[in-house]
Amino acid sequence: DTLYAPDAIVVGNARVRLAAPRFAGISYGGRVTIAAATVTLEGRFAWVMMDYRWINPQQGLAEAGRATFVCEQRERGWKIVHAHSSQLLPWDR
Image (cartoon, rainbow, N blue to C red; front, top):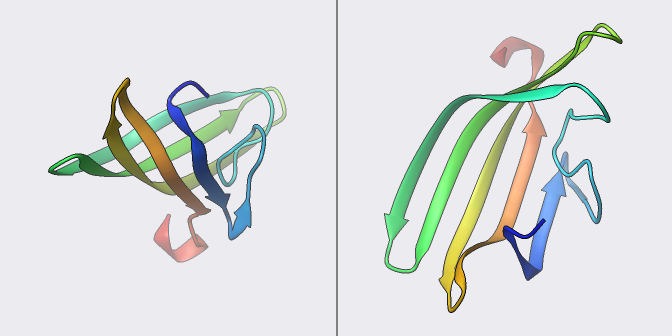
């Protein structure tokens, strides 16, 4: 959570997330891997789009998701000011 600005907004599947797990499709336990990521930098802002996968082999669960981060360069470095994630629809997997 140290990567987030104190005033950051985190949204997962259209709901504001105030605590972990912060991203759509991710539950407790398991492992998250990044499948793809792109970054666009413009002045003191950066937009990051990434596809991720969450797998919990012990429970036989897996989900895919997509997230967008808006980062801002502040006095103490880069901070996430907004993050939005959604689970992929079945036809997008």
